[in-house]
Amino acid sequence: MGGYEAQVEAVKDRYSDRILAILARIRDALRGAGLQCDDPEAMHCDRFEWSLGVGPTKPRDGVVNFSITEEPDYEGEGTGITFHLTILEDGGRVLGVFSPFNFTPDVWIDVADADAIEDRFALFEGLDPLEIVASLAGAVRA
Image (tube, rainbow, N blue to C red; front, side):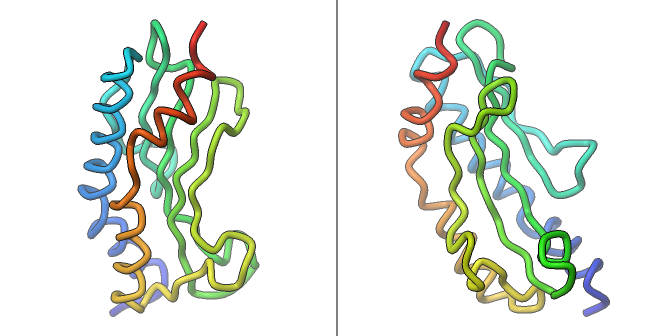
């Protein structure tokens, strides 16, 4: 199925719409909490990151990022990837992170293992958007 880079691109292509759907659920929950939100979008400067801006009066006081992270970028080698969701305040302060198995060898899923990738991604689809609201809403209020 092609080389590593082609496989990572295929994962991005396979999951992009589902990532945007997760961010849309989070957007709807944040709007329900009275916050302003952008619509989720793919980041143009990063080929494996999607973003949702949020804030009390403008949608960029904070951000929810969803990304596909590559093992070679962190370990120097390997063929693994992982997903993570990061909640950031304007200025970069981390308010929350969801990254299953982070800081363990199990964080990396071989990019060729479609079943393992699907299992890991399913954890993100099961996230309760109200947990994101709880992590973000208080921090971005004026």
